[in-house]
Image (cartoon, rainbow over all chains, first blue to last red; front, side):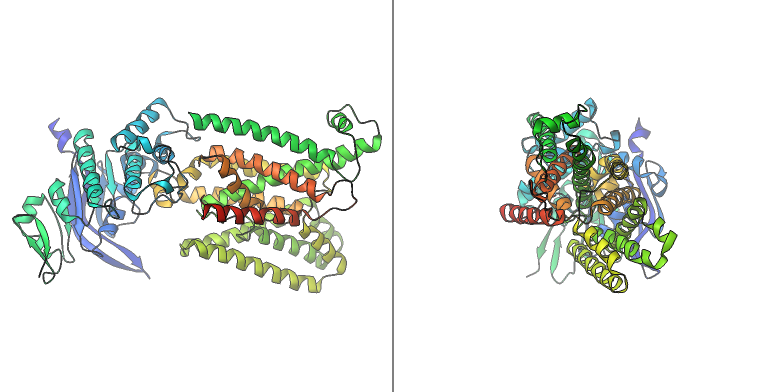
Length: 264
Length: 343
């Protein structure tokens, strides 16, 4: 049981992420090593352009990595078929659903695709998972609304519900708190925290809300232009890793409160 | 679920409407035939007059079936385009598919003169018309797709479609300059579009095209649903994007290409019918929308054909003109009323 608990969902070993441009590989971030365990909430923080999105896209297999290995549930990410991967890993992207004409229920139902037959017919289990996903994200009252009728906060909850319906042990969210007010930012992150505790899911999210991420995450990936750190938030504070996150002449980090402030 | 009951009701309603439109279409024409005689001719009893019988079974019925196949097929190809390109303005005509098909046919009809004699005769068979037209639309679709892989802007795709339309018009103009008057006339008449003058064997070929395209479309239904979320989401749910894209393109070019070969380029049906259908059906599920757009497309085409026929007169208007006259205002009205088109 103990072994089961410490068994990592995702292992990244000495990974370099980046992209190919005119036959040259451009490294965005390198020397990335971390293990993500079951039931953990992991935040990814860093300044704009430091490679958060690139890292996330690489982790979910949308973009090839330049160096190192990524293993999901002990298997090399590149060797897992897309259909098997769909049962291991679900995503919430920054882009909204392409069709705004979908109802919330249809959106969430699409999350069951890896499990349904060629016509997408729903079994009892599928309907249970959909209902549960709607309940947990507090969207059951919106189920018959169309996406274009929703506020940003409601739409974000609906897309999280879709990822939940996909019923994967690992969920990756790219900036789930952008465009949201303070209440919804806190609501979404608390929801993610609750999901890791109640359902024992591993959830990785990138965010610009460093303060909130420090308060709620079990582990943090801090990306600076020179290095990528991975540890528990309090240890990272103690090691003064946040100081180099933003240029010091503009933003100050207060160790005691764990908050950033603008330098006067 | 109330939504599902509503959909079942609409399906019954549309099914009935299609039957009524079919009977209405068959009983209208340049010659007046009493409704009772029409029923008799269709259901095997035979009409009182041999000429009436002949008109109905050899002219009006194949025409009506061609209308249904054309309407359904174009509507489905429009729906497929809108989902594939995730653009509410996509459709076989707008994206230049019909132009591509025209180009294929133009090269065949106008170029056949160059081969002359026996080879020219072989080239003019109905199958070769279908193949040329399907290849034309397939090539245009591939070109449009190649552009979309490079440019993510959806407006650019529409502009590319328009450009292909211009290029086709130009090539046709050049070809027609070098061809003889008879061939040119043949092509011009084809480009007006006509549902009539189809033999039963022609209807059979058209049916084979449509059924193949529709099977491919229904087979891709689940992936089409996933594509509504966008390519990245679809990929994350295990959809094989390349395979799906190939299937959708094949389905669209067989449908649009095959239909255009037989009845000429028909505007607006592919674009307008999915939007009209979405006014009734709140679902975005393709397993609901595909049969729904088929019914609406069939009904619309039958009605357009009835109008084009100018009942009790000797004249027939080009079907392409009627669909444009009807389709363009519908799209404008939908845009104005909803302020934006959704797909």
